[in-house]
Amino acid sequence: MQKTSSLYQAAVQEQIAPQGYIRITFGLTDTDAAATCAPPETAPGTFYSRPDTMLLEDGTPRATYATFEPGRMRADGSQLIPPKPGSADLRPEGFVSAALCGADGAFAAADVPGIVLTFSKIHTVPGLTFTFDPTCGDWPEEMHLTASREDAVFFTADYTPDAAVYTTPDAIERFDALAFTFPRMTRPYRRMRLQQLMFGFGLVFDNRLVEKAVHKLDVDPISRRLPTNTFDFTIVNINTLTGTGGQYLYDPDNASGIYKYISEQNPVKVEYGQYLASGMTWKDVAANTWAELELNGWREVYEGGVTEWVPGGRYYLTGQPTVDGLSASFKAQDALSGLDGTYYKGVYAPAGRSLYQLALEVLEDSGLAPFSGTAPPWKLWGGLVDFMTTAPLPVKKHKELLQLIAHAACCVLYTDREGYIRIEPANDVQDNFKLDFHTMLARPKVSQIPTLWAVECPAYTYAPEAEASELHKESYAVNGTLELHLTFSQAADVTVDVTGATVAAKAVFAAAADLTLTGSGEAVVTVTGRKLENSARTVTAPVESPDENGSVEALDNPLVTDAVHALAVAEWVRDWLLLRNTYEFEYRGSPELDPGDLIWLESQFAPFAAPARVLKNELTFSGGLKGKMIAKRMVDEE
Image (cartoon, rainbow, N blue to C red; front, side, top):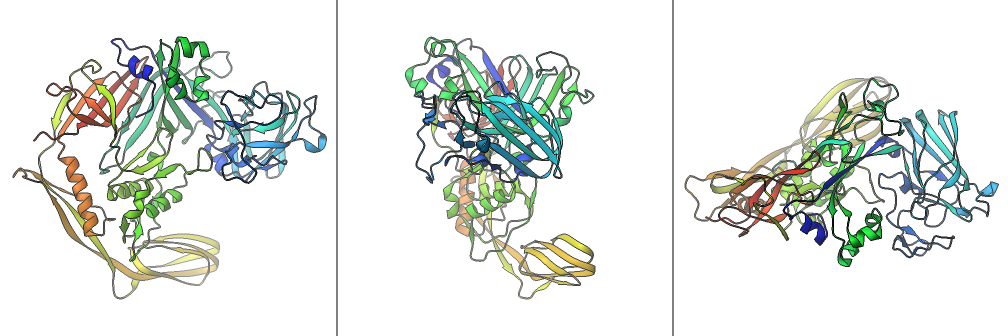
């Protein structure tokens, strides 16, 4: 459950709920540019300068370092005291020049701050967004930009930024290098700071522009299937960029529109707001960050009229919008849903490997890039190291393997509101959140799953055949360099023999091999190994005093290779399936609720007598919020 103030919690329980808001921040960016950019080359920086972090999706620091430059020692909580040089506690700050400008704001000719970015592929952007120093309101007065393609400069421009966050007005087509210089600041005796550089710009849609938004969150508490986390929204198809009005900004037929810049993986952030007529208490103020409070004046915070915002999630577009007249519709999904690549690097490990190590290898292979600081965009439960398996990971999509790992560890798999992929045990903290008939739009529909006899889970044993056999043999024409990806049956002690060409690179796994061959002519590739055979011993978790007509739930997870482990998984699933009552209903809509939350749920025969676990929370915004929920009652009455 997302953290909210006591006033928020009281407001949503009122007979007539106050006005609700939505805010969608859409990044019209080339998301691949940062990933293909070499480490930035910059003018000398301070010891806390971190130019590599300025290209991250969330590169802008939440709090900057206070220094002795004029006006940079604030006492409002928005700054931190920098640690000693070389400290491991340094926070991402982006680029900070070592040199200070003079009394007239100009840098000495030899000290003009500059940045050079080079890319491994060609990129096109509708503009560039520079976040300089919003905390203290500093930015360069002059900025010079050059763009190159294959070492030839084809575009130059001089800009005069007018704010700490500035977007250039020019599209830059097909570049592989960018260079910037910042010869003058708007204030004297300042360092040049660039906290974030976005390859594109951001668009913000609020209640006035959002026609409809549908937010679906669905997590299986026993990880039998992948979670659902999607966000679809429809906005008014008008020009919100230039302030001149006009229609059809997102229409593919509009040559001056932005349709061509919209692509899969453009980032989308969602927030939900709740208007609070009463002022916040000091306790509520302390629970918020300065960045959250600065959106409202102190008078509003104290006296009322403040909007409290709840994070809705971080998403990525699945493609370009569908345009229908004055409506443009977008579809987005979380990072986990987009892990559709195939993982084939599993290895046979007779001594056993931990599920933590397997999850880490799958995530690192997925290509997910950090979006904030240097931390990876996932958070794994440390207890995964206690679950061991000898099985090689099967050839499957990355997200499917993460689901198998979560299931084998008796965990849930989901993406949190910040955008981190998580594998961890289900939340067992009871929240003091009540859903009663007052906040429901109708009485819940109650259903009951069939009775259970037992849960069965096989424990697999993998053993290689005694003799090696041929797994793959094929001839290939090599003319210079040839890259090959081979697949075959799972095996141990896999070897690759090549005749007629030189093996420049080789990576061999249980069911696949990657080769790079060089030469000229026909090459014969032969793969041999001892095929893996598997057998299974089924372990049963019985139900105490079962219904003779109860069903048997059969599990099948190839990563479970131990009978004790299999029994633990079977008992975990059994205990969940014994909770039979499920509630489905429409209600006002609470964006602070997550699947997995334990809440108090009123039913006709048990007013708040037992907790319920949220399974699915679907929110629809169309001028106001409405929700659909599925919850499981956590007490078995039988």
